[in-house]
Length: 140
Image (cartoon, rainbow, N blue to C red; front, top):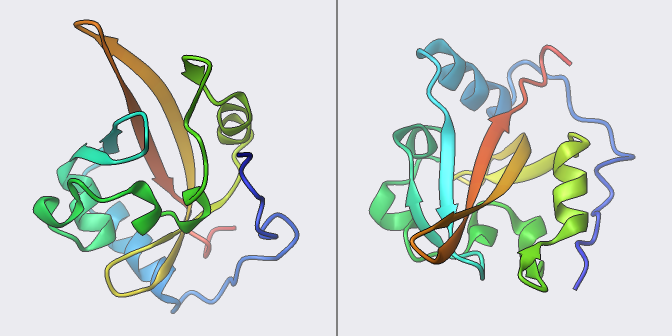
């Protein structure tokens, strides 16, 4: 199933500097840079996450592991990550085009993000590595 672009390409992002997403992004950016990374299986289930992911999304690791990535990125609910043993080309394309994904933190706040996704192979297994780059909408 193809990713449905949910209209945020035509919808402006709120530039209110007091918005929850700006607060989350500002808090994250105030710390030394730590990459926000999630490791997913081929079906999109979170296998691991970085400390920075805990900080951005306000979840503990144990709350995220074994959850589908759609708990953080609802736009990825019905996406097939792997097609014919390769990364979904459409998903890969929109990630490289800096498409804005809307993530949800534990409190339900929307955090606009860009994503990079990679297929990582090790010891005969394949996992997906998702790198999350929050967008500070105050600077947009």
